Length: 463
Image (cartoon, rainbow, N blue to C red):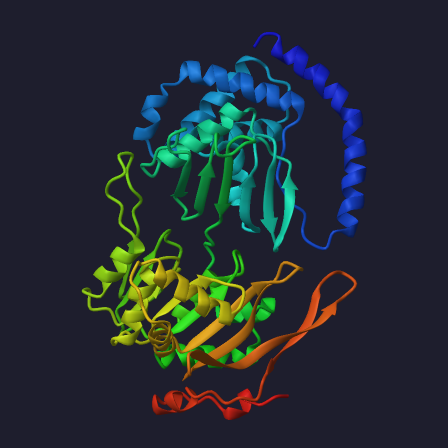
C-alpha cells in the first residue's frame, strides 16, 4: 500500500485528458437518445486498483465468518468504517465522492452480488444478462443495451454465482451445471456453467418488480386499450376461466397479476408457481411454490403435485403461474369441476397455438385421450384467451381477446372480440396501430349480466 498513492496519482494524470474527450462523446450520444441514459457509476483504472488493494487488506483484518451473524446494515457499517480507516492510513489521493463510491462497491462485493448490485438497484432495468466476466447486458424499456460494469475474472463471476445458489440451498458444479434460483428481492435467476456453457458462466436475471402496476398503468403505457379495461374486469369478477398466452417477456405474468387484483376479497385463492412472482393483495391467499430435487435427486415437488394438493385446500380460485407440463390436465379438470374463475398463462404465439400446446402438454402425462374428447374438455374448461406480445419497439401489448364458443365436429371454435390492427412503423421505429372491436357480442355477456356486471354492448361494436 506504500507505493499505491504514487501510482494512483500517475494513473489519474493520464486519465484527465481522456476524460474531456469521453464527456464530449457522452454529450453527443445523450442528445440523440430518447430513453434516459443508464446511470451506472464506473471506476477509473486508478480507483479499480485502489479498490482491489483495499479489499485484500480488508480481508486480512476482518473476521468475515462473523458477518453472517450481524444485521446487514450493521455489517455494512463496520465494513465502511474499516475501509475509511484504511484509506486514511495510506493517504489515498481521492476526493470524498470517489472514496464513497469505492467503499460502496467493496460493501457490495462482501455483502451482495458485487458488480450486479448497482443494476439490481436501478428500477428501469427489467433483465440482467451476464454472458461472461466482461460482457453484461441489461434490458430497459424493452430494449437490450450493453452495460459498462464487469467482473474482474471468471473466478470472480463464479464466486458470485456460488453466493446466489447457496443462498437458496442449491448447488452448482460440473455434475449439476444448471440452476434456477431466486434472489432475496424475488428476482428470478437462471445460471448455467461449463461444460454446457461454452463461453463461460452465464447468468440471466428476470427482475422482480417491487412497484405494483395497475390497469391504469397499462393503459398509460399503451399496453391495454382503455376500451377493454371494463371487459377484463368483468370477466374476472364473473368467474370466467382465463388463459393468458404470449411469448417470453411479453408481459403475461404482469397481466395475470393485474387481473387477479379484480378477484373479490372474500374468496380463498391458491397460487401455484415454479418461482414465486405473483403479488396478490387479497387477505386470503395461499402461496405454493415447487421444489427442485436435492443433490441426491430426491425431494422434488412439481406443479402437478401442487395442483392436485390445492384441490384439497378448499380454494375458490386457483391461479397457476404458468402451465408447461402434466399439470395442464389437472388444471383443466379443476376448471371443469367447480373451480370457476381460475387463471393461468402459457407460452404460445397465438390463441389457437395456445390450445394446441395444451393438447401437447396433456399428452406429456402419458394418459391417452381421444382427440375429440380432449378438445371438448379444453373448450368446456377455458372461457377466454388473452394474447399478449412484445412489439419490435419494446412495448408489451394485449393484441387479441378471444372467446371459446365450443365444438364444431373435432374443432374448437373461437370468436375474436378485440384485435390489434397494425398500421406500420413510424420514423423512429415505433409500431403504429389501433385496438379495435370486431363487432361480435360474446356469449359470456349474458353471464356477466346475470351476475350484475353491466358491460354495454356498445363496447363490442366496431368504431
